[in-house]
Length: 497
Image (cartoon, rainbow, N blue to C red):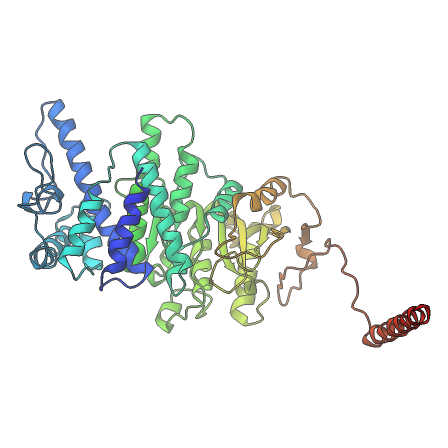
């Protein structure tokens, strides 16, 4: 229903001089969508208040409401072209009045968990990149066609928005860091099996793909009003450092049905993990932290294992923030399993002793389009800490004892036109439930792991043996024999002619 509208918006953005990349398209669509959503939400709340005879206080003052500046209507509900701002007047209003007004909400909000705070945070971080007021007017009229009233409408919009995020991720540059393939996320969730009432966390949430998919997973079936309230307000938590990703994550969660997402705009790694208390911990952690970054020395001081690798700092953060008995699934570069530097060895040792690393999913190249790196997914549970012993309770059958590996092989080269799909991961999820051993899956006993290096490299002992490479001289002799045989055959043919 709304697919053509999204295409029309993209066409407008493509012609706009201020928007040059897929990241720009997503950013500009996001703030427009957010304000249209906010207007629909306010209208719905005003109707509900009117039905019970109560007054309703609008969040936005009259001149800044969507219906006043973006899409004014005549008395019969038609678009009011006579009073609609357009051209330079529209750009001047948006940049000089609307954005400064919306930015002020952050200071006026009662807490970071309110929608008022989200308004201020979003518009304090992004800018209007429309340079032409005529292009912006066209985009506004297309956005006004969208409706957020019913769950079906939100569901369709969420799918369209996800497609836009995927396009941004596939476009290369730094867009890919915001996007984890949804089939991989869904498989990770199916293995971890979050339950209603548990808290779920992603400290590097990007476009909030993990949180949105976890919400959809827990939303299945008939929930009571109280269960739905807990799911929407007390279950999903995230942090994101980058401004654009923060805006996208907020909008993505809103479109999935969460009015005031618990996403904090902050540098997660700036927090000292020695300050973490039980109240700060979570039941489930799902994440694909950024890798390849180099963190400054002052950031590294927040962690017991010093390293400049961003992903390794995040892994320490996640281990620390996981509750005892909590479950986690973390995407990380496959080189983590075998790197020989001191930080990597120490981190592997920490993971194996403080957690039960029960599953490693080895993902093929092409899983992350444009990323150019191979990854694995680490599935682990937090081991209880014995305060009397001052150590993790590995002697009581906890800690890592055996690791089950699965080598994902879709049987094809993956790319933009042939990406990872849910069927590719179906066997992994089914086999992981019983830790079955097959040609693609096997166990590694921790007793067989080198206690000096803690090397956990992916080496499949069950894979069919490949035929050994032939000796070059043997190949040359065979070619010479075939040449002689061919010459004899040709000579015979010549004698018959």
